[in-house]
Amino acid sequence: MKKIILTIVCLVIGISYIEAQTIEQLVEKNKSTVCNCINAVDHIDNLEDLEVKFQNCLNPNKIDSLQLQKNGRLDVYREQLETALSDNCEIIEEKSQVLIDNYITNLANYKYDLEKPYKEVEEKVIGVYSLGFGHHSPEGSPKLFIYPKNRYAIVSFGEVQSGTWRVVKEKYLHLIPDKSKYPFTVYGRHNAKIKDSTKTSFLGDDFSYRTLIHYGELKEKPMLTPIFNIDANCFDFPFKRTVDKVYNKISLAYNRSDGFQENQELDIQLFNNDKKFNDFVIFEHTRKNNRSTTIVVTIDDDTLIFERGQITSKSSLENISDDDNEILINIMKVKEMPPFVYRNPGYRSFSEEEINSNSYSYDKELNTYVSIYECRNDCLEDDYHNYTYVNKYELLNDITTNTIQFEIAEKSFIYTVCD
Image (cartoon, rainbow, N blue to C red; front, side, top):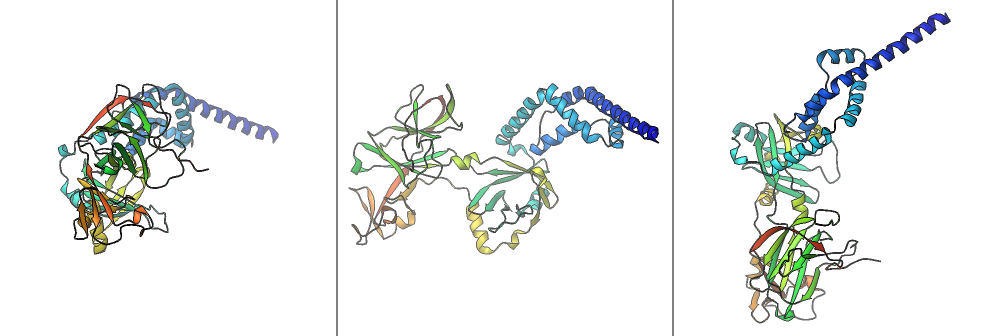
């Protein structure tokens, strides 16, 4: 009996050894072919397509596949093949990055005007799609609203993204978020109170050590000043500072890198101050533009398939209330930056209709709008709730963009740290 058991054990060990050897031989035989297959991939339609094409290259031929499946060793083969490729196919990492970079570049520069219309698909895709993917939130799941005339909105708790949608190659839906033309917008006015000085206020949540400013002409390698210090963690709105002199130019930039490297380059926007304004408000759109990457979704009848295989089904736009529908339509309107903005001393926003009503009159000496009502002094708690004085700021629209090397100043424009 012992001899029989020993014989069976030996046979099992022998079979396992033969199978292991067979897998190793298959890996050795196929790894070069797989590497060449991956190197031959010339484009991807989306990021999911990258994985599909690479996985197709990894698949063994039919005969090898049948043998491996019969022995239940297919997963072992794929695991050993991937290990062998990581050691012997250096092209994989480089090829993946090239394909992804090309994909992103092609998305950014896609010639949608050359894409033929797919009217039937376009009409069918219009509707509302839940983006919860089975996860329920107390605030409600995000929703994608696909409207006619190629406009869309993604609405989630506390945030809305709007943009343009297009059907590509009859089976892909491209969601192209709206972008600001520049990462910054500058408005200015003449402020007689500060004379030959320049006051600048920064309105936005994403001014940081990465947002950089420079006053005056740009030298060959200018010194740019971070608007905030690295460890800024104590913010008191509004963010403002006054400097000496009046400058004919203001330059702004956003440093995408975590730090600073020698001979590093970035895009810098130069705003010409031809009217010699000395009081500015600057708005930033860096977060909006950084998040503005085209989303590619696969269309499958009445469903959309997002990357990672997340599937959502369509419901009708008719289910939206009239009030919500009106709000969404207004959100999706393409908005240009207005030629003027109106702010009180605490930088609270006022509409042009409010200022041009009978409630305000223009004071030429102060270059400000003054309320006709009596409250002028010592009757308001703070500048933000001051309705008495409202300043009119004009858009600086003479802008040039240059790619330059730069240096970063050691001290930030505004320093703030909480103990």
